[in-house]
Image (tube, rainbow, N blue to C red; front, top):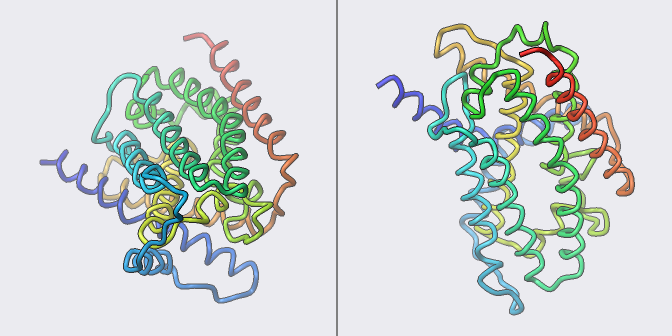
Length: 308
């Protein structure tokens, strides 16, 4: 019964919380700009409004364009079943699931890029090329970080790696974990196309990465894309929060509340970064992603050199 309740809470948070993080980010950016900003629940309203609208499809597109948002969302939802939340085990966990977790995002990215290429638009093809290139540079940082977690926790499952992550590890391997946390934060911003890598609010096609790939989507398809993007932000944010805030009270309710509070604080931090930094030139983005890979690689070498 206890497990069933935790699974239900896990599913409810996974389905309902992600758009709220976008609202918190937007309100934080509005605060720094001296504006009132949109309501916190505005992302929910925008997605529901898009769901009630019709869709317009170009005559050059095929079934691949229609399937892109659905497959991407399905892959992200499957990854959500592998991510433990609130110090509780994930609904689906097995040895090596961290590899599946990473490549489910890769599957969603593939269909997003394929849907963009299916339109025949040069702008969307340009965005797809950038997305694929930058993702290839970000993946090593993610995998090196997972190796660090596997070494520290002595587990090859996300549930074991994150739930059994000892807070005392920050005292014994603080330098390595700090490097890994910095790399993961960079990956978090890059994979979700946030500033300084991309501006989700820009309307200049030549400077877009993710947004330019979904220009032809409308109605429910665009709502699916937006919700999938918020869910991806939620999952990578949960990974970052589990490592940087390894809080365990022993009380299930307090742990769940602490997790939600930490996610909201992470959204505030992302909004602060976006408000205080300018967007990088495209030629600088690969350099920062390579730096993230090097940080996580150094972290991996530090923990591997330690005695078991």
